[in-house]
Image (cartoon, rainbow, N blue to C red; front, side):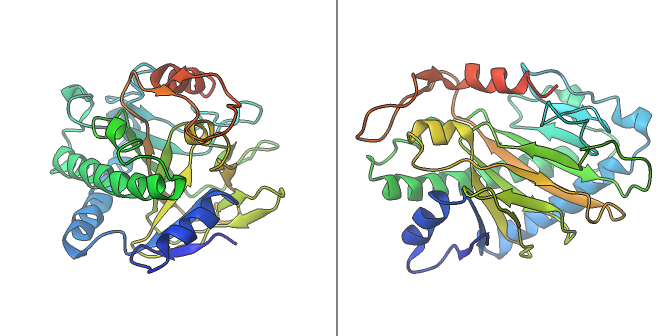
Length: 289
């Protein structure tokens, strides 16, 4: 089972420790108060409009490569599992205004860039709150994780899994089996269409429950490395069980500021050599596109 945790729970730290040392995923209730939740919901409504645009319009905002990791990626253009057929989805990557060139913001949709930027700000604020809790669980000094994520290199993605009734290749999924690359991922399931599954450490796959206005938070490979395997980054996928229905989600992929050196935070022999965070991210992205 994937745990569901109330962000306002009295024993929040212990629930976090249990979730992230065993399955690496949890669904959080009550991540926002009413006003920020309204902004996020408004953004989700606006972002869906992008995928209703004709393909030639969406292609005006093309994916710009692993150096920037921004823009539109079309149907079957990404393999998060390089050993499997391409994913049955389309997506749009965006980030802070200082990383986005103006030409990548769709001009056809009113309030798109404004609400997109506000969604990044809200996700960043929630990220810092979560990482502060992680510092307490890990018993490391305050700001060990949060300091290098204030000016971060995070990327937000809006994903559309279109309803589909065509041919499916052997082993092809809406999104293939993979783990995330960075520190953590915040994932909003926009509509209640099943398919997201997580593999626990015993190799058993579990469906992730839908929680209205909730956010899924999972460990990325970088943080597993950073914590010397104390926190676990686990495989997940979106299966084809409800492929006749459109599905939307929004992951916020959290990466530290470029130049951050990732080295063992635990008081035990290191399992990994130190590595610079952006070099690690680009190496992992290059395997998917």
